Image (cartoon, rainbow, N blue to C red; front, side, top):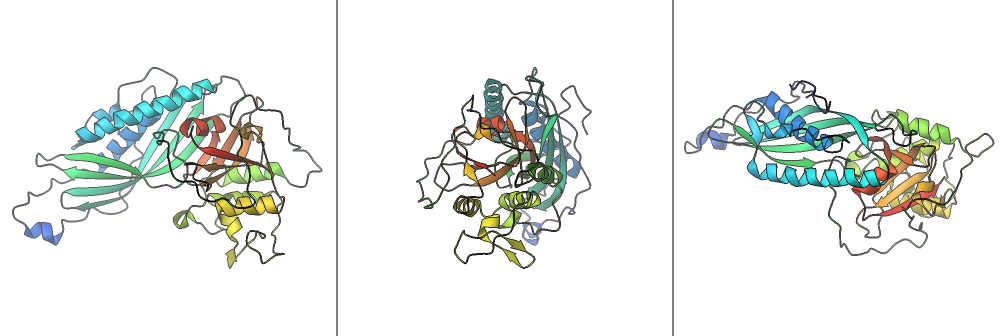
Length: 379
């Protein structure tokens, strides 16, 4: 376990492995020609995972960069030469995100990344390790109205290969979450995917330029909905899910289900008046509509039913307003988020599921996805 440094991007929260290391397979045991794999140091698997992800987070900080901790061996585990080169590219991409954030007037002054090992499986000369990353970033007070922190929980699968000298090498790191990449992950390459047909009733794209034209939202008493309640619900359940609802993480993602819950908490009513697709919106103990859990279906319903109006600029969003993103601009929206905080200078902060994230600024999302299409909804 590393001691905390000035970066505070540290510390394996390495726990006892939830799955015991498995013995070699019978096929490997029977093959006398195959060298026996060195016994892995399970704690070292967690430490090297923490080192890699901590280095990524440190690359976001608005301060001189410290030496990369992942370049040092952790027990009998180290990065492979190929992955070390890949991580060089990843860190350069993350530093690019930091530079784009600076253009928006945003920076992070401090951070803490903790990694927990969820499971480990060893088969012959290979090991597969699943980990959970919990990262908190402290906003630097540049405008003075930023929230204290943003945070996210992300999941990764790491693959290791045993070497005959008794060491293990980390060969690959793969995200397993749906939804937007975390801010400490590399920016995806621009896609040239063919555009899919869009729905007849759809929201227009929102601009993502600053300054945005004024579009104040009435948050006071006498409004139809309680927007503060929407934001409060979202921030209460961003990582500790409400057990009163089903989860859809493994069935395409939980993002829109979670946003529907937040809107319901703020006064949206179930709509069961029609049998037409996308004309209803409801959840019950026995089922739910596609518009409750589907990204595009939610958009089509809210436009048809006039539950929302499109905003011309995403920076106009306020409490309870919703943002959707089409990451590859293929005509189908991919992710849904809700505004749970807005600074006095006009920056919306989004909270969402998959990967579970708290108060991520719109500027941060744009910095990570500069080539995507954005849709903003006034609720």
